[in-house]
Every structure is written in structure tokens, then in C-alpha cells.
Image 1 (cartoon, rainbow, N blue to C red):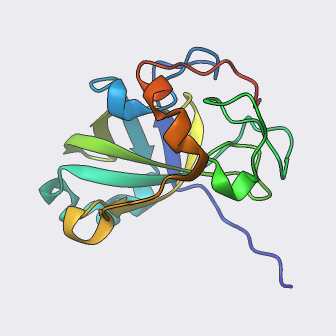
Image 2 (tube, rainbow, N blue to C red):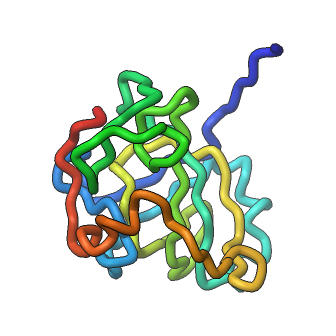
Length: 160
């Protein structure tokens, strides 16, 4: 298979200088502020983005040092297949977060509900559109037993 390469389009800034102590589910840590610093050559791509209340950030887990097909996720004590988790120990260390877009000023997007470590390389931005992006889920797998633990949970940095 042909090799695929991505170049960062910017950097995500947050108050989290390390993975340890970072919220793992920003839905329960609303209000944590951050900034997306887009490379100036991509600013034209932000046209019309301020019309969206939330955006999806796709990024590279740059601190993830290894891959595991059976990681133990933050909310559990037993391993699961990596594709049934959101663990950063992935064959391709890609992350995704939905954040609230507060405002845009030049090449900076001011955001809230951040669960991303400072300095994370940004790969793409997409608008979050509830009528297209939200599904009523009737199964959430192994998480159904531990979902209540997600509230106010912080990372223990097992995945660096």
C-alpha cells in the first residue's frame, strides 16, 4: 500500500502541558479554554467558520510513543480492541475532539471544552453539524458498564 503523509496545518494550545491530569471527556469539563493557531497560509480556509458553534479538530497524538491492539482504556481495568476505544495508542495516532468555537481572530480560533495537550499538531478542522453528526446510539459496548466514571475523570498518563 502507498504511504500516506500529512502535514500539520497548525498547533493546538491548551492549559495542559502534560497528558497527566488532562480531562478525558471534555463534555463534563466544559469551559476549559484553548486556542488553535492556524498557519497563516490556511487562513482563507476559515471563511464562514464563525457561523458554527462547534468544530471538529483532527490531530496527531504526538506524545503517543507506542501502539497497542489491546490497550487498557482510561475508564476500565481490562484491555479492549483498540478500535473499540479512544486510546491514543493506535496504529495511526489520530485524535478527534469536538470543541466549542468562541471566536475567530486572524489565524487564531478561540475554543472551549478542550481535552488536548498543549502543542498538539492540528491536521484538519471540520464543522460540527448536529443534524448530520449526531445519532441516537442504542449500544455503547463495554462503556455501558463504566460510562458514569467519565464525569470529572482525568488522565493518568498511561498512554504516553
